[in-house]
Image (cartoon, rainbow, N blue to C red; front, side, top):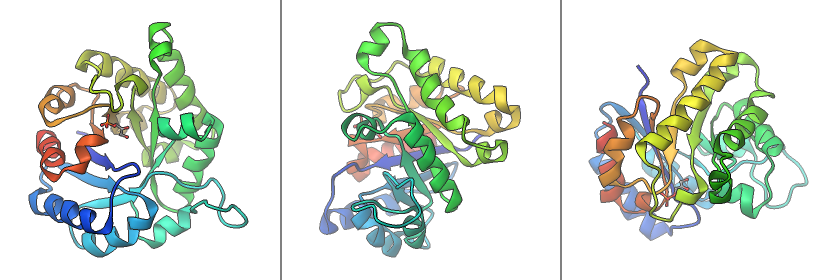
Length: 249
Ligand code: 13P
């Protein structure tokens, strides 16, 4: 039985004072019963997470990582640095990184490797745009994005990643994928991993992301291949985020 996992992606939001209120609220309301829970915050706030969340059942992580280990890469953050600040997770290949920072699937795959080498759990994000969906290319696009990562991973590493399906047309738009649409893609992604290794596929957590809210979380999370959520907007208010976490629990 796969454990549910709910991750809040704060994107480029937050302040020391605001985070403090938000994190305290989440810690207070999170019972850690049947679901794991984490927040992926802007890098400058990782120290704050480490201070506030250490010893709580809540994990934390980053939203991006460099493909390189160290050196002359101005502005980049190395996986070892994330490890220094107690990160458990790091998002790799979020659609906003792919779109605004021209991250290719090959670069995303290198980032996944860098994360794994530092002992982090990469959350590999895939998803199609509206144009791609309307052109009937959803399956093709997400499978190619996943394949680039599978191509660089040894089979044992497959058990150390998390996948997230985030249709770009559902992110921040209020247009959630229907449970059936999401389930179809999740099942497809799991099947693709199963071609490499059935056990790894069976235990792989595949999260859904894109306008997930407390009122639609239950139906999405009830699907057999939806193992949790990657939450944007609703992760910025403790009550909303906890509503989703409780649905998962
Ligand atoms: P929203 O929940 O705001 O649609 O964002 C989803 C997302 O991009 C999480 O990574």
